[in-house]
Amino acid sequence: MTQNQKPKSTWQKVRKLFNDLHLWMGIASGLILFVVCLSGTIYTFNTEVQEFMEPEKFTVQIEAGVEPMAAEAIMAKVAAETGGKVSAITIPADPYRTYTVNVKMDKGGEGKGPGGKAKGSDKGAGEKGGEGKKGPEAAVAKGGPGAGPGGKGGGRDRGTNYLVNPYTAEVIGTTESPTSEFFMTMFRLHRWLLLDTEVGRPIVGWATIIFTLIVISGLVIWIPQKVKNWRQGLKIKWSGNWKRVNHDLHNSLGFYSSFLLLVMSLTGLTWSFEWYKEGFFKVLGVEQPKDRKEEPLFSTVPTDPTQATAPTIADYVKAADTALPYKGDYRISFSTDSAATVSINKNKVGFFAPAASDKLQLDQYSGQVLKADVFADKPFNEKITSSIKPLHVGNVYGTFSKILYFIACLVATSLPITGTLIWINKLRKKSKKGAIPVARKSATV
Image (cartoon, rainbow, N blue to C red; front, top):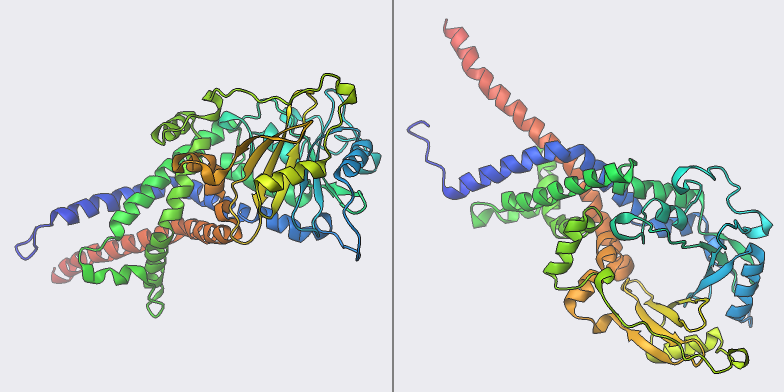
């Protein structure tokens, strides 16, 4: 240190330490984070893109005065055409949308697809680990969305979702398509880097932990030493040279997106490490679903079941409308057990509609509501643990929050690039400064 240089303050030393940590953690994980963030950005609007690519599968034309067919008739036709058993039906609030009928096949039977084609006859059938499955089935077979703890399917058959015209009961197709297969590839890239789950999951998990530390250290670095310089870190100087613009893009956009990026990383870790998930629930004071001990509910079975008249699906919907008086999409799940209840999930619709659904359990014979699980009535900590997936993927408040998440993901994808450019520019600057004394010395000689 020369006599003219002032000693560094404590804040400058702390900032220098965080700057070094930020730099080297970014270099160590930059490529993985770029891939994870890019695939996450692409996956954000997967549902909307699939519907845009094949609108004929998700929407129908309505003739004046025509009413939807009874749900029972639709289910019977789908069951006959596919050769399976209907386990659930989704009834949308929008009259222009198709119904979704979930069909499960008997064990050992392939069943039939639309038009009588045997399921599983497509290429890829018979490959290891359920590779022949696509869409939701492939997700479970490979630990996809909705899989059990740790991303494993747990051997549960989630069936195939058929899209049906509610006015004609015509089976238009399934939710499986080249587009859905592409997004499933993006999902696997995001979660496991297309590697084996036991290898890819921890790699992505540790990279996510590093990313969390990078975001936190970046926030510390962003805080200027003088209050008057705060505004400088909140805007981009587009009139500056490319180096200045690149620095501002990294600095300002990183700051604006930091909150959502922390939410994404902290929730995403629950799928990477079981120990983290257990700690996450414990910190919030909520029991994990697998640890909860709840008394099961049963329908009141009539003395003579053969004489019992079960309510129609329209009756179930009417009872649910009374308990949940708002416009929304219904998913009604059935069971082959004579004493089981009918489960109904209802989701609000709209641009700001929350992803969380309200759940009801109804007596399958009387249609009486036996239990109501309303999301708005839950304590705040339970709302968080019930919304881990929406908080991670961005549909926690419908399309509005997905747009915000998409922008934040796009920024996250750019951060490794802009950060690397900043580092390279600093290296060049240092090398130029180091070359000046050598040149002067040689000139003097």
